[in-house]
Image (cartoon, rainbow, N blue to C red; front, top):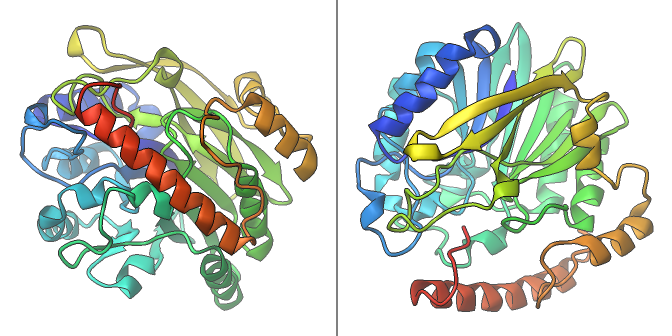
Length: 360
């Protein structure tokens, strides 16, 4: 089973590039379960005509991926509500292709339910949810479409209950969280991820930061705080103005051998030269021996208080951004998020007026 980050293919040309990538690396991806964040619904619209980043995916993407992999899509992200009118047709297409999905639905219960599938005879429950702050510019639900938001107390209870009811099954929690282009996870993410492992999760995976945030082993479980993008091409969205910096071109595909409970890291570099949207393989290594991953995970040996101090000093984004320290401080975190939404809406307005660059 392989986990990848954000996927957004704006047209058939980009989908073809992705299909060519999987054909080139069929020895790795061929018919393996591929879990990824579908960053936007399926639509045949032209995103280059947009004035802001409304993300979508080519309707041919599911059938293309199914030729060479066994895809599973996570829908709990801020861009699913960009075009809520396309949700029903997206779901119908995914069901026609027999592709499991989680994280969004036509009711809160449907959005919050894990998706069940099997991998090599092993039972898997996959939970998917989105940080509520990331929906600052969206109404949830929109047109009857619900995106599952991260509720730490509920998610811990759900994971624990599923582990009690299905002790032999593996549980994955795939979360859309963090700030875009922040290279370090919030301190509360380390704390909450470990609590999820304690509750029975085997693997916790994060997306949205658009850069790899590193990871660590905790107990018998693994945590990867941010996978980075998988394919979210430059100069295709927001009228061609959405583009990511050089450090965000590093991509990680995380392979999980469930039977051995081991992880492998497959590293790629996104190369946008001549709009070819190419993924260049940089190498593969085990989770434990990966020097690149260790460099991206300077917090591995730190306790909570050490990491809070380290995060305050070394995080990329500091201006008017609070430090979320403890997921259990719900009232304080809610207040922090309300302040962060004001900042984000201001930045959104400035970007729409071309005063600053778009942040996704």
